[in-house]
Length: 123
Length: 151
Image 1 (cartoon, rainbow over the protein chains, first blue to last red):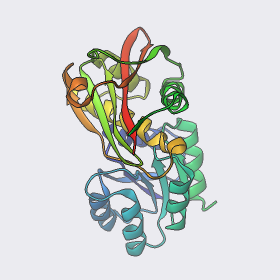
Image 2 (cartoon, rainbow over the protein chains, first blue to last red):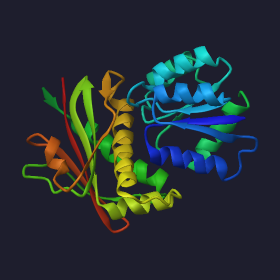
Image 3 (cartoon, rainbow over the protein chains, first blue to last red):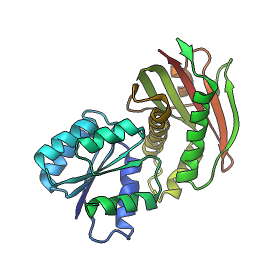
């Protein structure tokens, strides 16, 4: 499984990278990083990720718009939203648009690993 | 325009506790939560999110570099540059602001964070009488300023 991480915070991009590269997620390898939705579409076109972690509040293009554009371009991609917008209606909106899971910030490494595995396995 | 009520202010106190509990596995000591009447003393690194929609105003997280370095090291980060410390304080402000929607509702719109370096950063955005939450974590002080009103 090829993973792309989309978040405007370097701290979060690096944290998710370390979780993925630190073991416990067999078969998932990092192929791309992006700082906003517009960059995510460019990186996705080049790297064809199977799984994407997606922040929602980002400059240039937010996560909600990016989910729609990304799934139009790569409909088989599984998207895990990782966002501080933890209200129920935001989560439902993201899932209705085609995201497969939702992790609220702040998150623990274990929470993220479980959610990533679930999304990657199509649960 | 109406100020926040006690329950709404409490949600920010709980969000601050939750952030440290999850990320640092150690709760901060909340030293006070009060209506500020004078100038607030800030720290070198400031993250600001702006609210619109059902509320207007800001949440400002003001932290010293040492606290941010310790939080980053706990997360395995080795880049402790000024840019990364500013990124971290912005992300903390984004998290506290975003979590507020769970209680304050989805009509609350939240900006991407702005990051300011310099202890005067907290005064740059604050209006007259904001709520201030002061805390200590791992011997380091910090301030979270809640400067918002209902529309």
